[in-house]
Image 1 (cartoon, rainbow, N blue to C red):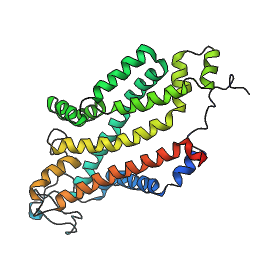
Image 2 (image 1 turned 60 degrees about the horizontal axis):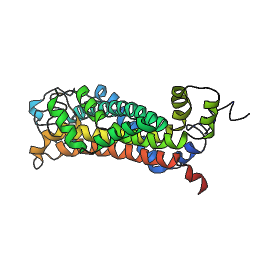
Image 3 (image 1 turned 90 degrees about the vertical axis):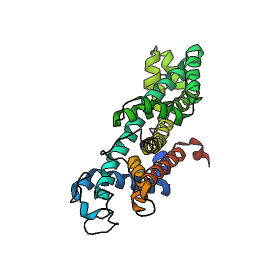
Image 4 (image 1 turned 90 degrees about the horizontal axis):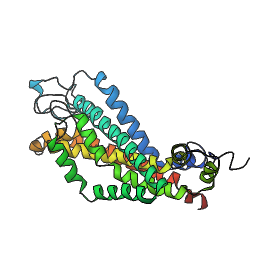
Length: 293
């Protein structure tokens, strides 16, 4: 079978073969994946297993330290159970992280694929637009947008996505530019396939590796950004908990009740580090140069 009749077979699918074996051989990436699975399960199932909700107030147990009675992680200044608040906050923080990742990956992929394949003035305009966004410090852009808009989980998701898609676009544009002259793309052109078909049916599946890596690292960045925005008071607003506003409420009690900051801080650290471990493992797994080592 010639390449003209089978343009799809440029690479072996990423979900099997050497890519999977290399990822499975990365113990740190597997450890990060296991932590994320456990963290997601805890946030999804945990609140239903606890005797308290995130809004239940027990004034007699205010500032209870961890492992006090049925308050496994202690309580906050209002007597609310820290475990219940941590898991509910995790639902929101992880949901914002995944949603922002999905939105920024879609935008960045569209821009990167079109810029990389079309090239010329279209690619130049798109990539100069990317450069323009990147020229602004992202944290100031995020805070400016967050301060100008009404705080909500949806707003925070959109703000983070609007300031995160540029890195994805750069990665995708570079990858597509390296693929657009490959034999399977030339075969598609010879068969009369449209540019849209070639971009999204031929080239994009072969660029999926770097996109997955970028998406994984974007989740970690989005969780960190949500925590930062909420910590400064521009993000998720109480009584709705998030890991960021839990840290904000804990800063006045660092000396008397340090667990109020340690617990959500540890959750953020675990989530961000785990996604970074997974991203590093995926980057090594998709690196074709590893085949020649």
